[in-house]
Amino acid sequence: MNCKIVVLACFLFALSSIHHGACFSIGNNLEICPDYSKAVNLTYDVLRTASPNIFGIATLNIRVPEDDLLSEPITCVLIIDQVHDGTGGDVTIMNGGVGSEYVEIHITSKIWRGLKYKVQVFTAGSSTRIPETSSSPIVTDSTSGNSSFPAIPTSP
Image (cartoon, rainbow, N blue to C red; front, top):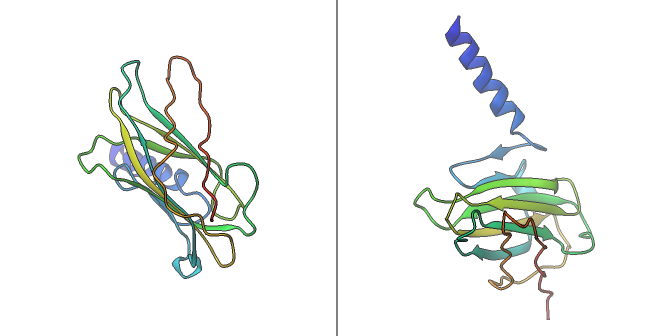
Protein backbone atom coordinates (compact mmCIF):
# COMPACT_ATOMS: atom_id res chain seq x y z
CA MET A 1 0.00 0.00 0.00
CA ASN A 2 2.77 2.47 0.93
CA CYS A 3 4.56 1.69 -2.35
CA LYS A 4 1.44 2.66 -4.34
CA ILE A 5 1.19 5.97 -2.50
CA VAL A 6 4.86 6.76 -3.19
CA VAL A 7 4.48 5.89 -6.89
CA LEU A 8 1.31 8.00 -7.13
CA ALA A 9 2.99 10.94 -5.38
CA CYS A 10 5.99 10.75 -7.75
CA PHE A 11 3.68 10.60 -10.77
CA LEU A 12 1.66 13.61 -9.61
CA PHE A 13 4.84 15.60 -8.92
CA ALA A 14 6.20 14.83 -12.41
CA LEU A 15 2.84 15.69 -13.97
CA SER A 16 2.68 19.02 -12.12
CA SER A 17 6.10 20.08 -13.48
CA ILE A 18 4.96 19.92 -17.11
CA HIS A 19 4.17 23.35 -18.57
CA HIS A 20 2.94 23.75 -22.16
CA GLY A 21 4.30 20.45 -23.45
CA ALA A 22 7.63 18.74 -22.91
CA CYS A 23 9.42 20.04 -19.86
CA PHE A 24 12.58 18.41 -18.65
CA SER A 25 14.42 19.53 -15.56
CA ILE A 26 17.74 17.71 -15.44
CA GLY A 27 19.84 18.70 -12.46
CA ASN A 28 19.85 22.48 -12.42
CA ASN A 29 18.74 22.85 -16.05
CA LEU A 30 15.31 23.50 -17.52
CA GLU A 31 14.32 22.56 -21.06
CA ILE A 32 10.84 23.31 -22.42
CA CYS A 33 10.56 22.33 -26.07
CA PRO A 34 7.44 20.44 -27.14
CA ASP A 35 8.48 20.26 -30.82
CA TYR A 36 12.15 20.72 -31.76
CA SER A 37 11.24 21.09 -35.45
CA LYS A 38 9.64 24.46 -34.56
CA ALA A 39 12.80 25.75 -32.83
CA VAL A 40 13.98 27.51 -36.00
CA ASN A 41 15.06 31.01 -34.98
CA LEU A 42 17.38 31.54 -32.01
CA THR A 43 15.86 34.81 -30.76
CA TYR A 44 17.76 35.12 -27.49
CA ASP A 45 21.11 33.58 -26.55
CA VAL A 46 22.84 34.96 -23.49
CA LEU A 47 25.07 33.99 -20.59
CA ARG A 48 24.01 35.48 -17.24
CA THR A 49 26.01 35.34 -14.02
CA ALA A 50 25.51 36.38 -10.42
CA SER A 51 28.36 36.37 -7.92
CA PRO A 52 27.97 34.68 -4.54
CA ASN A 53 26.20 36.98 -2.14
CA ILE A 54 27.30 37.21 1.50
CA PHE A 55 23.77 38.26 2.47
CA GLY A 56 22.18 35.00 1.34
CA ILE A 57 20.92 33.90 -2.02
CA ALA A 58 21.81 35.30 -5.45
CA THR A 59 18.96 35.68 -7.93
CA LEU A 60 18.75 36.15 -11.69
CA ASN A 61 15.59 37.63 -13.24
CA ILE A 62 15.48 37.53 -17.03
CA ARG A 63 12.65 38.72 -19.29
CA VAL A 64 12.63 38.09 -23.03
CA PRO A 65 12.05 40.60 -24.53
CA GLU A 66 12.66 43.26 -21.89
CA ASP A 67 9.71 45.60 -22.48
CA ASP A 68 7.54 44.54 -25.37
CA LEU A 69 6.51 41.25 -26.97
CA LEU A 70 8.18 39.14 -29.63
CA SER A 71 6.54 39.20 -33.06
CA GLU A 72 5.63 35.51 -32.76
CA PRO A 73 5.19 32.88 -30.03
CA ILE A 74 8.11 31.20 -28.31
CA THR A 75 8.59 27.56 -29.36
CA CYS A 76 11.45 26.48 -27.05
CA VAL A 77 13.15 27.71 -23.87
CA LEU A 78 16.49 26.24 -22.78
CA ILE A 79 18.06 27.30 -19.46
CA ILE A 80 21.39 25.51 -18.95
CA ASP A 81 23.60 25.66 -15.84
CA GLN A 82 27.20 26.30 -16.93
CA VAL A 83 28.66 25.06 -13.62
CA HIS A 84 28.55 21.28 -13.60
CA ASP A 85 29.31 20.58 -9.94
CA GLY A 86 25.73 20.45 -8.67
CA THR A 87 25.87 23.87 -7.00
CA GLY A 88 23.52 25.59 -9.46
CA GLY A 89 20.16 27.10 -8.69
CA ASP A 90 16.46 26.50 -8.95
CA VAL A 91 14.97 27.62 -12.27
CA THR A 92 11.36 28.80 -12.53
CA ILE A 93 9.32 30.15 -15.44
CA MET A 94 7.34 32.91 -13.72
CA ASN A 95 5.18 34.06 -16.66
CA GLY A 96 4.88 33.45 -20.38
CA GLY A 97 7.01 30.75 -21.98
CA VAL A 98 6.24 28.36 -24.82
CA GLY A 99 3.21 29.59 -26.76
CA SER A 100 3.57 33.17 -25.46
CA GLU A 101 5.33 36.17 -26.97
CA TYR A 102 7.50 36.61 -23.86
CA VAL A 103 9.00 34.67 -20.97
CA GLU A 104 10.01 35.71 -17.45
CA ILE A 105 12.63 33.48 -15.82
CA HIS A 106 13.63 33.46 -12.15
CA ILE A 107 16.75 31.59 -11.00
CA THR A 108 17.64 31.30 -7.30
CA SER A 109 21.03 30.06 -6.12
CA LYS A 110 21.78 27.76 -3.26
CA ILE A 111 22.88 29.64 -0.17
CA TRP A 112 26.27 31.40 -0.56
CA ARG A 113 26.60 30.21 -4.17
CA GLY A 114 26.74 32.13 -7.41
CA LEU A 115 24.95 31.45 -10.67
CA LYS A 116 26.12 31.00 -14.26
CA TYR A 117 23.36 30.15 -16.74
CA LYS A 118 23.01 30.14 -20.52
CA VAL A 119 19.50 31.07 -21.65
CA GLN A 120 18.25 30.36 -25.17
CA VAL A 121 14.81 31.24 -26.52
CA PHE A 122 13.59 30.01 -29.93
CA THR A 123 10.69 30.97 -32.18
CA ALA A 124 9.37 29.37 -35.35
CA GLY A 125 10.56 31.94 -37.85
CA SER A 126 10.92 35.68 -38.35
CA SER A 127 11.46 37.24 -34.89
CA THR A 128 14.47 39.53 -34.60
CA ARG A 129 17.59 37.67 -33.54
CA ILE A 130 19.30 39.06 -30.44
CA PRO A 131 23.09 38.56 -30.34
CA GLU A 132 24.80 36.78 -27.45
CA THR A 133 26.17 38.92 -24.65
CA SER A 134 27.40 38.35 -21.14
CA SER A 135 26.64 41.83 -19.81
CA SER A 136 23.90 42.98 -17.45
CA PRO A 137 24.01 40.38 -14.70
CA ILE A 138 21.18 40.80 -12.25
CA VAL A 139 21.68 39.97 -8.59
CA THR A 140 18.89 40.24 -6.09
CA ASP A 141 19.67 40.46 -2.41
CA SER A 142 17.13 38.15 -0.81
CA THR A 143 17.05 40.33 2.30
CA SER A 144 16.04 43.50 0.44
CA GLY A 145 13.89 41.91 -2.27
CA ASN A 146 15.16 44.40 -4.86
CA SER A 147 15.36 43.08 -8.38
CA SER A 148 15.13 44.23 -11.95
CA PHE A 149 15.16 42.64 -15.34
CA PRO A 150 18.31 42.98 -17.48
CA ALA A 151 18.54 45.11 -20.57
CA ILE A 152 18.36 42.98 -23.69
CA PRO A 153 20.80 44.01 -26.41
CA THR A 154 19.40 44.82 -29.84
CA SER A 155 20.84 43.94 -33.21
CA PRO A 156 23.12 46.57 -34.78
